[in-house]
Image (cartoon, rainbow, N blue to C red):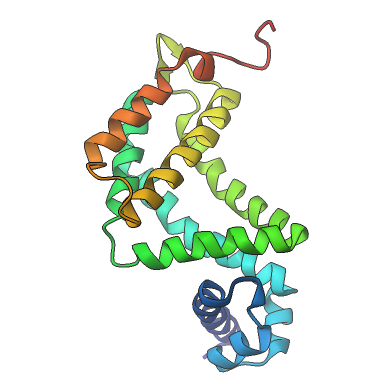
Length: 208
């Protein structure tokens, strides 16, 4: 095994271990336990990620990236904004039925707890989320909506709103608090949000 392959193997082992330990222990997660579970030392954590915060931020990126990649693959160039948002909504709802849905919810709640206990770590977590969401912003930007092309600023505002909507709905479905919230409900709710002119039509240059 080459040095590069060894580094990637160690990185993967630490991320997998971090997912398990962080999901369980939150801000009390210990680096030595993560390293031990990965079959490595804490020195490997610092060498590969720089700090506990760096490891957690990388964990967020590692968790989110496949989801956004799958969304991108499902979007066609000719879709308008409402069609893209509906496809996104349906993907999000299907994720609620995945085998890892409970683990995903646990990780979400844990990361929020960690951010509340450590503002610096919270900033790193937020930066990781925003980096991944930039791909979604790019998917929305330029799409046709009400006869106009969506600007990057409008797309960013929309992504913020959709995140809040889908995170809340997903938690409700997973916890049994959203009866009847099937794919069509997710799609209809998202389309209604997008159709709100005060959300999508307002831009940085719009008059106050």
